[in-house]
Length: 321
Ligand code: PBG
Image (cartoon, rainbow, N blue to C red):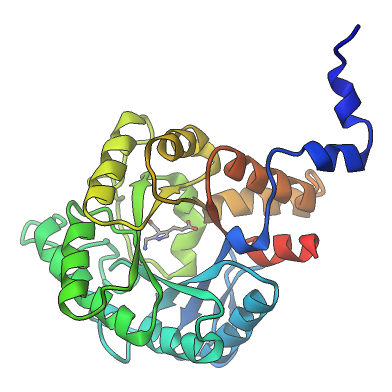
């Protein structure tokens, strides 16, 4: 037998030599929640190990992320009050903008600071856009709200804006308004292929979501894959610097397809439901947490993701050092 594939699996050193996929902390992005009006972190019962941060604890966590060499952090705000148009998104004293400024003060340019640019955390109806008089999400009116939020976030110091709302034309509209306001260096990460997923369930508690119903009129049908190519191409044409596929593990075919078809970096988001599946099983002793964590992250990168947003970013980075 001249050909024996097992030769290259014979020792850990040999396997390391021929490994096709390598994880590195610099490609991991840690999503973080900051809640207005609290002094100590609040646990999130649907996401064991993840908290809603106070401003102080947020800054500490971000410093840890920097020390461990993560690629970046993605900030989500949990406001004390909400209204129909999501005023907290673009208010200078809105919690996400205050937190972004504090984080930038602490890390400067040493870590990439990203913000979620969406209305759902700030609206009293929980949708990602404003509603028309029939209660439907009004795409074009929402674009103006995103542009106002984009300028507020850029002003607060965000390096990257994560446009997660799935409104048509959002990337082009926000890019133009940012440029007009003098923020031509602010990076746009388009949640280009974002599915209407049950895997966001635990996140909804993390941001105290007010949503009734679902987001199927703007997020994509899990049954479709070609549609993602169209969404991604539109976002790239409109000026997206980075594109995202979300969720990650159940959509690896989409990650693969997108990464083979665009020439911008591709991010993937291992979302809250993916995280808690592993956590719940690990707590019962049914899965080995660290092993499965690294296996899922490796799989997402192997499928073609250049960056991975994951609640495991710190835990994974600690295993590499
Ligand atoms: C929208 C947004 C959501 C997530 C990230 N950005 C929720 C949604 O679209 O319903 C989910 C992330 C996760 O589940 O970890 N602002």
